[in-house]
Image (cartoon, rainbow, N blue to C red):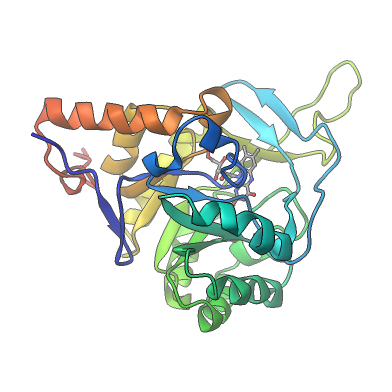
Length: 305
Ligand SMILES: Cc1cc2nc3c(=O)[nH]c(=O)nc-3n(C[C@H](O)[C@H](O)[C@H](O)COP(=O)(O)O)c2cc1C
């Protein structure tokens, strides 16, 4: 038996459920030297903003127990160079392409997405409504249900393909934000972005990041991501892409049992850049062993007490 690992999100079919998380594989050029990107369900790019950004000065990453902190500050080439220099490379890759977008005002999200709408090769846009590492990282949108709904509705007017809303765990009621995203016209949700955190150097008494705080990612946040996905899956109809601490195929099974229909791999890429390939193989072997024919037989099937 060959298990069926195809998944469909908002009417778009993906060869498998494993995607790269935004900001952890750049624009894919380095990863393509390690494995063919056609192995991925989708490549999700680093956040793109209207203007190029250098991000925060180093140090902007720090290792912590079971994870890492980052405050990169949305360093990226800006939408003009992205279209001119990166899209030609992405267009040659035989995988789904999802572009992650942020802005400091609703008009900036609209501006970038209007430009991307003209590009056939882009399958979806993921709106970063949740970056904790810059003053204008979308948190002022992602924190507030009304702003979440408004920003997605505004982008939907100019971007005609499906929109993914990427939500923050750093909120009191993620279900309210998820419902607002649905109301605004999002077709898919990504849960979760990084968890706000910091670390201090006890010799210098300085924070270990120049931004003073950052986003915690990696295995340390997996239980948080699973709990948020469980809450949203049971209270919102949108399909969910799970992200947060996924390192191997066992993690993916847990995310799917909690309701994720697809997954993203982030921090694990810094340790094993080929993690997505190993995960896909491990998932297929697990399905064969358990005689599971399709991922639909796993998604949301956690047996709760
Ligand atoms: C170095 C680094 C940079 C990131 N940059 C972005 C980004 O530009 N946009 C975004 O939406 N998420 C960004 N993220 C968050 C990831 O996409 C993901 O949501 C988070 O890392 C949790 O997944 P993980 O535990 O598998 O890394 C970044 C994460 C890291 C570690």
